[in-house]
Image (cartoon, rainbow, N blue to C red; front, side):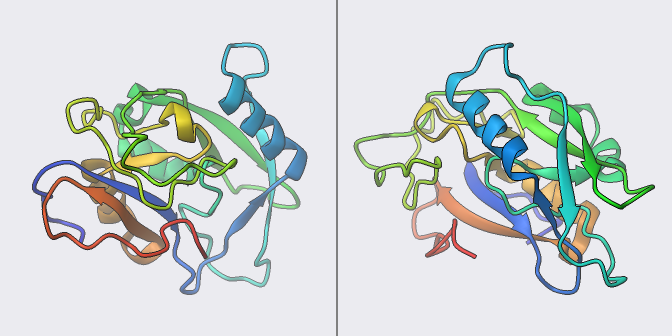
Length: 197
């Protein structure tokens, strides 16, 4: 999937590959605050950092995209820097403080571009956590120039655009699993359970 340009708009859910890399769990209170901010918006309550802990602390190599939380993508600082300023067109990067891990430099990608691009009549109903099992987007409203966005009805689940997914996969190899949730191309198969583990 990496290395080739995708024909037409496509939207993905990203999560860390479970093949031999360490993953992070965000602090529950910090993740709740993040979800509240995603629901309410505004500068007040905007996260300035989050805490986390490694789930695999046995010498397993650390994933450069270690969080599976739909609304809280975490990237290694190296990956964020190699991705360039394009990430900043859709949000900002805030530090992740990892318990008992000195020298592990990671950032939370705080996506703040909320774009009304989901076709609510043709999509399945969004869950409380922002997941939409069968999304349908309005292509003319989809901000494909951005790496990611949050539809208002699903403001706690980051939607990644195809070109940004290609770039991240090129930079990380097998460390990210990309699940196609929607494509404008007819006949393309989407992932049957994009939000499941």
